[in-house]
Length: 469
Image 1 (tube, rainbow, N blue to C red):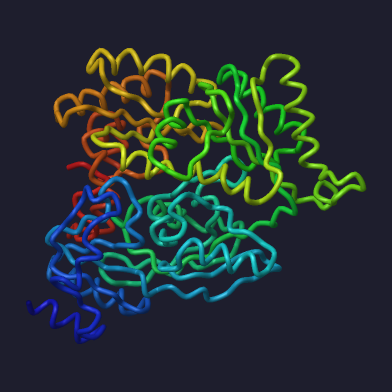
Image 2: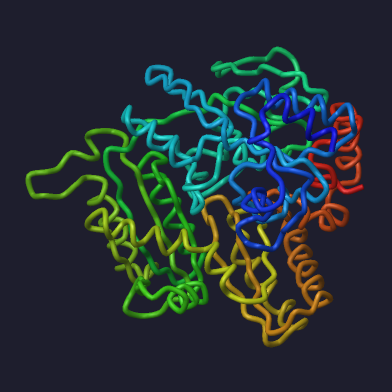
């Protein structure tokens, strides 16, 4: 094709992949979304990205930006499109320990940024199970959340500046390290979370945070979710907001994790309905310095609070990590959620959020509605309880599209009744387009369409994703 010849002249023939060479890029990690692209392109810098997009725009050829393929909604499926991989834009340009920022390319893997920050005794706090393959461009494009949102916020809260190639190939430089900039519309926030539909993110300035001197990590069994929220509030008050993670796993989730992993161990001797992984990070040296009796203040504080709740009957069981290996095992249980879902058979997966005091109501309301559709269905919930994000999965015995659609709508109904959202952190992609049509405010959809038309009049950037026609 002449377009590929033109692009090869810009980036080199060896970085225009077709056929078998393109195979590793054309499917997401779940295997649910497999496309047949025109080619996979691997530019090595922003200018090459801009040159590619200019050629595509001139010919009206769709462009699908691709990062680490760790998404769950089909946002990077590149059917009959040019798939533009940012994997070669993987340079960490600068780490500023004084300003506590990192300037990075869109292809930098999350774990690599973690390591670069750690070298300066800092952290980049965004973390989730796919951190070994997810890339900065992708986490910005989906406004990824993860387990530490409670303390540090979503990806958009951790980004100060971006560089973006627009649909006509022009480069928009918003690479500022400023914490305050009120010079007009906030275009940085507009492109974050847009899933590549408004521009191709090529670089970013990300915030770094102080590295905790010590962690107190525990698995806790609670009688109810209300008791769990009471524990969260008590810990936040006692530690000055130092709770980094507060993750909820149901009994069904624990059981399924045990059944799928030979190395998995139960969190407690007994089985409980409400299982919480809690982690507190001590950034003040006084809370982390080893005492003469061998205890660490932040760990002792957690032990004291949990002990008091156990005596009062508001806590059923608790195991506090005594070393890094035990802490890692607790986190492995939580971060295996993706594998637990994908390896579980036929499933309906939703990523929703409700006010944190309504998570229990969501559970109580959704189960009878799903059972009315399929009495044999099996539910699994894992939740970022501290921010109200619920990953609800329903496993089925048969592949029935009508049943699956009915279940999605049943979950949507409950979420809407509770004042929540049908998309918390995974984005929209392809899988939630119908939900967007059904549930998103129609005026908001019109505004989105107008913005898309203004910034990408030919509709070449990740067409057919995020915004329903």
